[in-house]
Image (tube, rainbow, N blue to C red; front, side, top):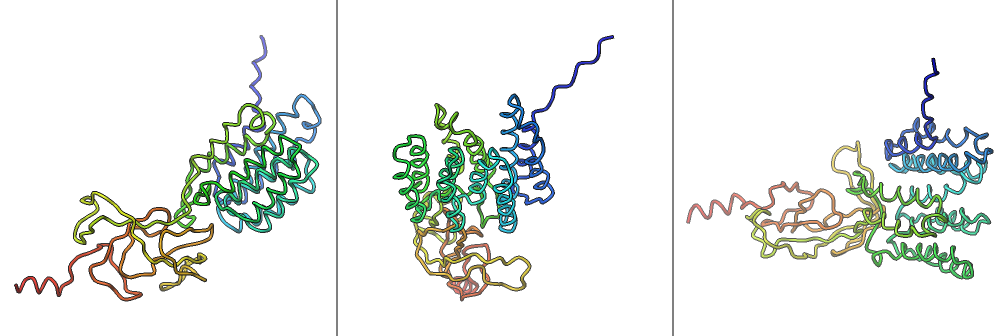
Length: 353
């Protein structure tokens, strides 16, 4: 009797990718430890030339999975940076090459000073693939911000790699990302005060990062159009307030035919965590008063600075609709969601007539 056929062996990278994607944005420490363990097992497999390529993809997916899980909050991000430092010190070269891309996933459109300096050092590394990832990471963390520090570093890199076509091509891509939308767009997959995750946006960024794990065979070859995977992640980083044209305070939005831009005074400052605090705590600190439209940075939050208008949304981001109040309320009063109803005194006057 012939022996039963052997079960097909599952590729090692098939486990890392679903775990990172399924737990993306959860900050689960147990899943992170399991994913990071994929970077230490199979040392003999790397020595075998027949399985080296598969093993490299396996570890690349594991490193990106660590960043994908920790993208949710600041504490998980800081803990993951320590993990990446250990990988840069003790792991093999093929794992180190993915670390700049993973760091850029943690800080998309958020050019922190320490991260910019770290990627700037790695962009001059002797390993070509590692330098590619660091240069592209500089563009990703500064995407849509017009960050002057990153722009200066990229200009220096363009001069430094002026005689190396591949390096220069990646530098030009990073410069384009830095100036994306003339500073009016962002690639941050989180919205609504970083409370909700745009999954198609994160999927597009993650797809491009997997492509960048082997730039010589993809972006630097004939698959440069893979950069279009960033399109689903592009979203406005400005705040524009709109109001119904000829606003009739008694009408509903269902009867409004046209919205026009309505400049409104807003306070823009650093967001403050208010979960679990009693009363009505301040949601921003160190604010400045501006008139819309206004740009919002990664950690900025906006709130209305006038009592003449009421926002129809709880979060002021992107394009928001406001309605003018019939009766101006005092600062700190609670405004109901029913935008305009004639107050009792006006109704009484009409009844007497």
